[in-house]
Length: 452
Image 1 (spheres, rainbow, N blue to C red):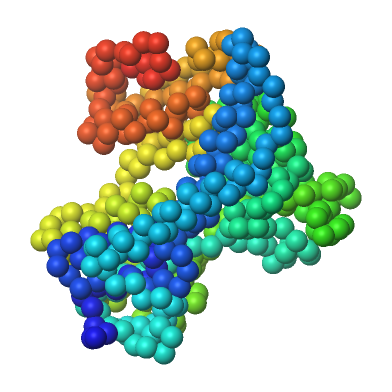
Image 2 (image 1 turned 135 degrees about the horizontal axis):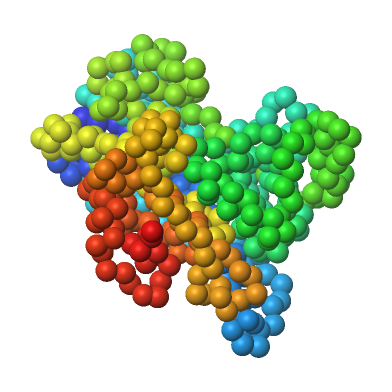
């Protein structure tokens, strides 16, 4: 069999699978190179297992709420092992499906680690491969700090899903202030663990609208999560095989920690694929530099997904991969990926949905042309519960036409309601369009079309 393909994707995650499948659908000879499980971070140690755990925490909250609705509910211990086994069985089913998916899509799976030999050639386990188009879609990996003594006693988000399979950690410390850190902190709190979050003076939810940041912080405190804003970690020591102590520079410490989770960022997987043997340019973060068509500076080589540093989200990688396939083999030269107006959800409790500019960014770009509408209320569901979890919504509009350029929600159902509003914003909806839409009652989403 020839080792030359029309297109080869390096990495069998969401982006790599998408470009290969789309190219193959047009008759191209396509391959994916992957040494580990197909599906990448999202399926194996990211979005999918995280969402299952989030549902578990949501049920834990609902059991408490059920008592306020009049149900005689006895809340027992969580069978952690049962939850983990069911989660992994579900993921296993996805992985089994990939075999049929690639075969039916006529995409070849080359198992192993790819390394560039030069701008045109890849090597996998001693075998060399060439392609008309090579797509780098190697994703990223979580970081463990190298400047903190004993940091290796902690685990990353990968380790959370790979290593905690028998017993629920009862005392958890999460280090970080972004998506992953806050999602882990709140889901573990919901499942009954004692949770501390350390963000070591870094901004929490950097880039999110300030109203959302404030509302989430208020909820974390209400839920009993310990937030340490300024404490700088000096070292980590191991007490037993089961737990560790976190020592701070001021002499204080957190003892008997069952799980220390590092969620301080991710590094692009661009340092181990032989890019030094090519002319491909990287930025200071190690991200592959691409143009608006995901082209690198080397003809015939592209990069998509987390490694280009634009929007590290699974649906973005999928969309970019499919559009690249449409351009290369579907005759759709203008089918480009737009990185504007990307809706995203953060699975905290309650969830956050956001799209467009924050108020601060909008005012920086447009000054006095900006107007803001916002509301905060206890939704009907929580009117009946002792835990009065608020919903907060904010619309940011531009100019006399009041075009909606930012929509930010934290509250029950935010994860499901945002998708439709994202469609409206991409179509250029104005505040009047929102106002002229008849509200659905009684739901929280109606507040977005009745806001004054």
